[in-house]
Length: 476
Image 1 (cartoon, rainbow, N blue to C red):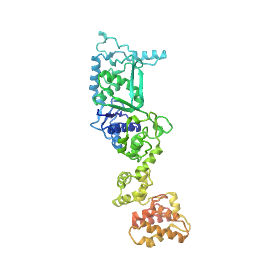
Image 2: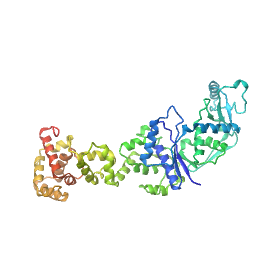
Image 3: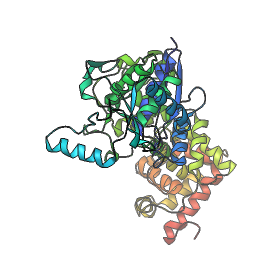
Image 4: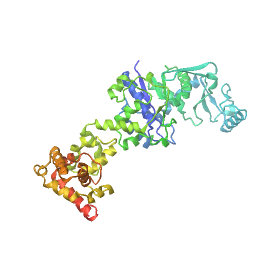
């Protein structure tokens, strides 16, 4: 048997991070078994489905690196096939026409509530033939569900789960306007797409009993079910907007790498020993749906951010440059060269691409303003003013011997210099750092000297000195 899995989101909003994990588990299991991973857009809710949501789902899956086999299936476009399946069940006596009006159904439910019963369809048209008076009257098509015995699902994650058939009423397959219901559409699509494994959130477990009955009635092989627990927030409650962003586009826009999210999500409910860092190849080789935990996993933003820092540090410099360039103002070729040269230092300090871009901005462009702490450093009247420190560096042999000063030579000079002046090395570097970046935190100043070169450093020193003397913004 060739394993065929599917991810079937509804395009009514953003791509939920829980949905991404469901897609990931389907993808990995298909790849692990040499099978196929399919995508179906369940857009039967026409009032809420939007083209923008469809685009967001597809873009989100492509960004995170979950490509699917074959063409995307759109459920609404298959409505005729869904109706044909309902007509088949009618012909075979496995479904029936229900002429109950909305008013009758409301009265039925109110009566059941008054008696303390769970509201459910009472089967009033299950064995009743319509009279001549019903000719031309709208009707719904209901499934003639088994009333005795029980339905058992042998779930790969939850284990055997049983429901008494008497608890399940006759669900609607076609509404009175002829439109198929979600339950019918899902079953028919799974049959036609040859889905062998239905891997989805455990909030769909109750639906599975009805769907399994419907599959059996249609005479098709039963899929294998695996209902995975939902993701909870750090406080143990169901993940929602109050825990922070739950749409995948947030993580993309806020500088998380797709491989970080893949690595983190696979470990929400599944693990491979104590392995924390799991490559794509390892994930495919190791993942098995039967190893997914029954308990809900907790989403921890701090852990995700920490993991993202690891992936940034281990990402090729040129790729990081390509990723942060759109987050920066248009850079000249010279600035792009500085950025690439600076990346080994910059990526050691950043946990997101947003941080990386912000740190890069202060590195590759002369500061347009100085934060208050940096200005305090530049205007301090201690034993070593910035004007003296800048002039002495520029006049030093370590500075004048080459266009791109050697970091080791500058550091050796700086250590001798502060010893002579009786000040700390950190004080001197703090002044240089403030002048170069307008901030009090940056990568190695010695590395910046080498990367930017004499001309750019001296240009920034002049801007900083003017700002320190006048209190004006550089260039003003």
